[in-house]
Image (cartoon, rainbow, N blue to C red; front, side, top):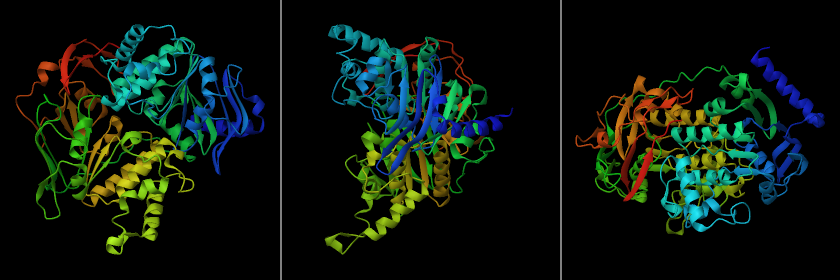
Length: 584
């Protein structure tokens, strides 16, 4: 039987299951579950089942109910109709779920910013498995766990606000791995904030748990990842389950067909990256120092160009794009942008950058993006209040114009919103991210700087985003695009810059923008073109600090082996950290 027929059969089977829900069986299952938020049907008759000793993916577009299903299974949300069974019991609260052995890592990075790493890891656990541990034992346990997960030494006493988003994500994941009685692990978009190397370590842990009989559930938008890691996948659409795919049928074509409800060709995108037709530079950095001891960077981007930025987590690429956007100050050098008079002006702040047509979209929507106490509507149009106001100093807001902008942007990015006066927190994480992107596009910037903007966005919306970005640059605008997902660059960026140790390590152009060559560059192999319009000074000390010998396949298969183990010290932001590259 063909895979296409399997999909049709699975879809029709689901319709039967909704009528005969007693046929749903398994160690973990939900029967005809409904969950409403006002008029919004988050779950509309879901039937789902899974067994111990398997990695089961829950996949679908933004707002399809994936995260709601994870919360129902974790006892966080009560259901309005149906039945939930985990090992024969129904979790009715997070506390009961923990006692049953259910560990959940939620989509949002839930961290107490002012508390230490060790306190964040053990929060809520003192009345459970670690109540008899001394503080010293907790510190040693936290140090060992974080080094194992993050691949580097993390000071257990460090306050969390000093750490990067990926390290914060590891802390939330670490809480789940601290528990000794875990029988069910639910990971809701847990790899969204992780780079490729970190994701591989997470996958290794997931496989170990599966082999020990744990039921592992992964909610993700990253199709390439779920195809590699999952034993089975349940696809959701509009609050319902629409099909189950076994390992042999797990491929992009089948997944997209079920997610969208229409047949897909299954072929990889053949889009060609847009190449600029001019040499006119619109933004540049001269002798820019990202970290106190890093090599200065000279960088320039032309009008109508999409430049990709990437690197292994913690190598300075995130700091670099924030400096270019005026969000963060550099340790030396200058950033300049072409103003309306075609003259370069220096800028050092977010407001100066914004006044010169530079807009920034963060991937950390909770900390740097959404305004949680405001509505969906206000979150999207808030930067336009002043520009659309009338009557001079009286500042009457032109609500008619704002309403038109809101409706246009919501339709353009296909944002599933519900009533527009609902709080932004009522949306799924992916739809919150789309509101942030729409807010930035609504200001009509000339230069758009995106810091991992597709984090938490489904594959269909990503394609729409790439289409908008191509149109954006074809109109003479410019995009600087940071991402940890290497597939995002292919067919979108004609040039990709790889960062290591706070400076540019290599540059890849045109046909060299491929997943395997980019990955080699990220691990310290030179496979790009060196420096052209982007330069690295000759006194670079990278070669003294990095001597990793790697063997890497492309993204469709796991990293086979990292041959050599290297320990070296690097100073980043005045803190010494030991970096370890381990054999998988």
